[in-house]
Length: 95
Image (cartoon, rainbow, N blue to C red; front, side):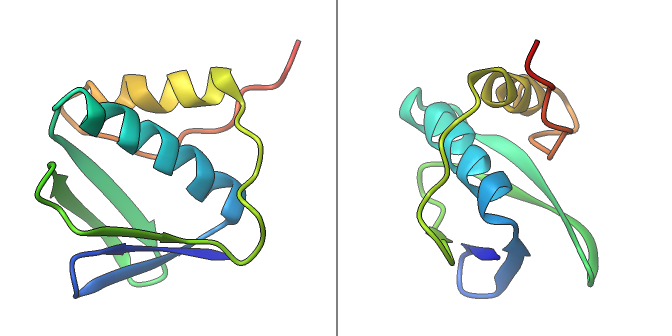
């Protein structure tokens, strides 16, 4: 189980595999200079934060960063381009 820290106040426990894909999607957006909303759901409830190049983000993994499923990465980036923002969607099953 990894952790995503946003600023100094918010830390969310996230499965390493999910976190690896969220990190890749977020960095992809930020490299293009695109800010976006990120919806985080955990045991404390749901919250949405605004992510921009000025955001302090820390990605911490319990194990090695997992390999990336390109189809899942693309699906996550697509959610970031919607009004509701980046959120975790189920990993597509490989054909």
